[in-house]
Length: 307
Image (cartoon, rainbow, N blue to C red; front, side, top):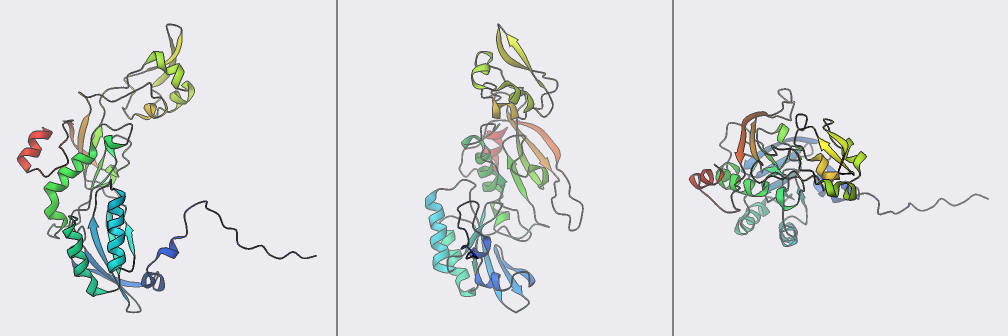
């Protein structure tokens, strides 16, 4: 006896298919776009082969935002864009609408809430960055504070398109470089300069020694015994201060108030449209960790706090 085909299985495993969240104009013209152009800083129009148009309004936002801020963006999207918006990889919010008349009222409301519109064309990007001391266990700096101070200083280049070319900025709180430091034009990188401190009396109780040894990318960690207790030792000449070991072994803290700081990098490029991809090059090896507070500062105050 033939069995009836079962209904499509429903599951909560994995994300829903992105297609159901596309704006109707994007869905209709998917893969059939003719060109795009910048109407003003932060505002782009994409024109399809069919003649349909979709407008995107790019708004800069912090890396760390509250539920209230997400609700604000959602309410603005409902009011002006039929609920359509997207979050970009560089911490921007892009409102998507096919109604040109909605652009200026949306910008007015967004700016009234204190959020800048820009980051398109020959401008600086919103700084992509990691979470720093706020969350990351291996952070060497308060990257959120540094990003806030940097964007305060460079704000005019985000809301206008007066640079010679697009300039991508990034920041990361440690050598793991989750913030695309290796492929951005200008980058700030938090660095440790001393190997981890080993709490021998705790290692055997809170760490799995084989996992700790294998976590080191340079094979600088070896098992050992101290006063009859199993622990580990670090070859300081091989240590690259990456904090991978601390990730798996909390008894090897690497934070150092005196020797942790930031370095500056330049020249990275991820695109290969006109030239080959390039890694950043070290421009300044160390600035001490005296991170600015999250407030507006002028150039003299910022330099005084950092240096």
